[in-house]
Length: 244
Image (cartoon, rainbow, N blue to C red; front, side):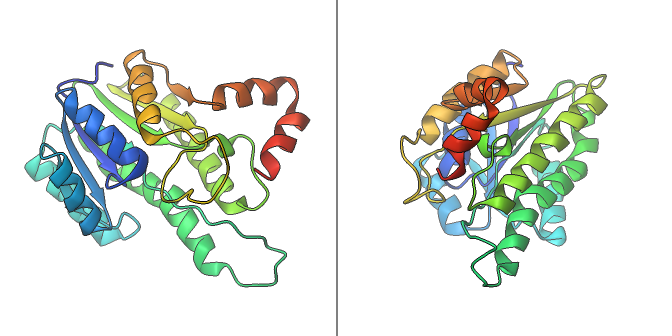
């Protein structure tokens, strides 16, 4: 799928991977709309890259999702690519005798439920396009989980499985389903965590190349090695990632 001349909506587009994708895709001649909860971040992104359009939206809220859908259909009827990028991660242990109800709810809602509901909301519109795509950003942790991010890993694994099954359902339609599977990325969310992080810009450039090559599962950075290791020596892969 050629990533030029498309109209693209990116959730969580105000920073990190979403913003890097927005900049690169805009530079390639696409119309890019970013959305997120922080109007401050969205305005800053627009100031840095004036070609971008933005819409403030909390994708976990049904009314906000519907407003976003109505806005896109009205203002950008040619929109044919949805990038499900919004995400949040909290590190905690269930053995620490504290309540993590708020973090659990946020991770499941943002990383999985909201993405699925937004996809369902946009799908009828995407099916009307000559060519369209749904692009889900998951994580290497969707394949090999780490100890202190149980719900994050589970939510990304759920999104990964949802994307695969949806790809089966849509294989006879104009809508393609891609998955971007990055290793640990240097973002606000990962500040102070892990080592040897890759930049959002690296993720963006590799992801775009993968989409244009129609690789439906795009493994980025050390994810390539992790997948191979998990297939050949799963116990070693688990040992490496467990406390990463």
